[in-house]
Image (cartoon, rainbow, N blue to C red):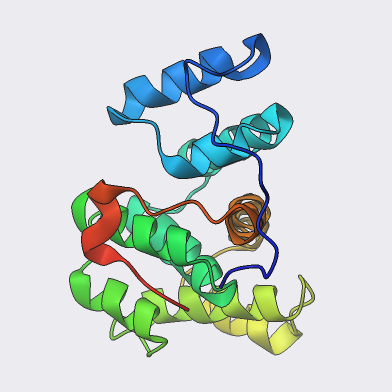
Length: 189
């Protein structure tokens, strides 16, 4: 999904960055071996990029979810938000870094049920939190907890929703091109 309006601000590179975001971009370029296009567009608002990166790191390192579960959550939110860039990028990460079985990744991309019942419960509850704007029913929470998750996990999904809202909405209005490394898993809403 893309906004009718596209921000006209140019991507910010390490060479064009101001002091407030230059170190952040240098670190991300070192982490990835390249500077993701999404970060270059978000860097037009250093606070936006820094907040996103901080929240993303906190979710990755502090949540009780496995890397596979984290990716399921990020992909479900990105799909629900219609973010072509994030679904493509997280599909690549799922396949190559987070240990998500390809059939799970493909099910999320296609909007189909996941064969693994616990991951399906996670995906379904993430969708419930997305659809209800954080106001799930008691029955919805009960099904999530009965699948093996906790109330703490609910709060952790809220963090993921917050982080993905920053990147998904930024991508809608900035429309960065999907980086070549992720192109094999491109997706369109």
